[in-house]
Image 1: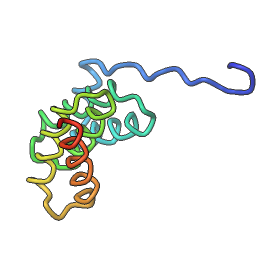
Image 2 (image 1 turned 30 degrees about the vertical axis):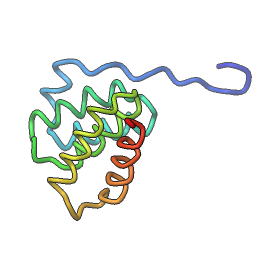
Image 3 (image 1 turned 90 degrees about the vertical axis):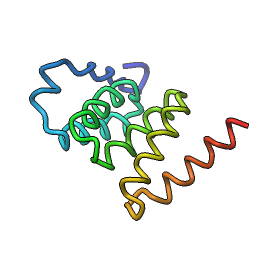
Length: 109
């Protein structure tokens, strides 16, 4: 605790056992939670595991892209947003993914 602010310790990085005991949907849920907490490195680990287990899981690609963007890995973020859009062209995150992809393209020039 610093002053009146309660600090939360970063989530531990997932271990092999955590990956093996979770479904790909469970890994996405954990990854999204880490993205929401701005713990992008941990989120990447969960979401990469989800995409390796189920490469067709569009939501995993979207949140993986957001996590990559959060750590400044724009090339990986762009590829992951593109993968999301190819898997879910009418998906719930379509507009957000398209906007973020355009912003990455603008930053690269």
